[in-house]
Structures are given as structure tokens and as C-alpha cells.
Image (cartoon, rainbow, N blue to C red):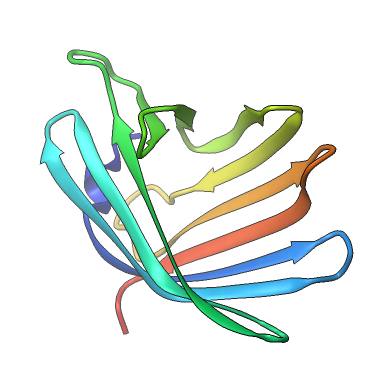
Length: 136
């Protein structure tokens, strides 16, 4: 699935729920910009909120494919591999922790898309759901 069809600006709404019951939300914007035929820059900026307060948050990812290849990968800003960009189930080992995710980008005209992660291991234990929608 080509991420080129997602190029543009999206509102993002994220919920993170830890195993201990702690809950965090993020609201903000995601911008996907085509850098060339094989690279899309994915910037997120927003505000994280929790019971005791709030803080600004941001991250940058890249969607890349090898020249001439059909498949895409998500990589971190520093170039480390994250996961394949494919609809359905994806996984990422982060040390001894495991990210099990689901990429849900509907076929046809895209009016919204979602990413869900279930993260477990000795250092992490949470669920994260992000919904991307057109700007309000």
C-alpha cells in the first residue's frame, strides 16, 4: 500500500492506556509530505494530556521504499527500522519489548485511517490507538 495517497495534513487523536490504568490522550496534527517518489516525511505535533497536566509532544517518522521496490517501511527519524507499511498486522521488537500493531487504511478514497499498538514486555505495557481524520 503506497503511503503517497496519505500525503497531506491530518488531525490526530491518540489514546494511550497503560496496564496500571494510567491514561493519556494526544490531540494535534500529522503532516505527511512527499520528499520524492520513494520517501515521505511524517511529522506529528500535538499536546499530551493526563490527569495531572499536559505537555507538547512531537515526533518524525519516514515512510521509505528501496528504489524500484513495491513495499514501503516506516523508519525512525534517526534511520532505525520500525515496521513494514502494510495493511493489517505489523510487529516491531524494541529490545525485549514487543509492539504488535494494526495498520488500518481503507481502500478507495481515504477519509480517515487508524493505527493501533499493543505493547508488552519488561519495560512497557500499554495499548495505543491513533485515529487520523481530515482537519476540522
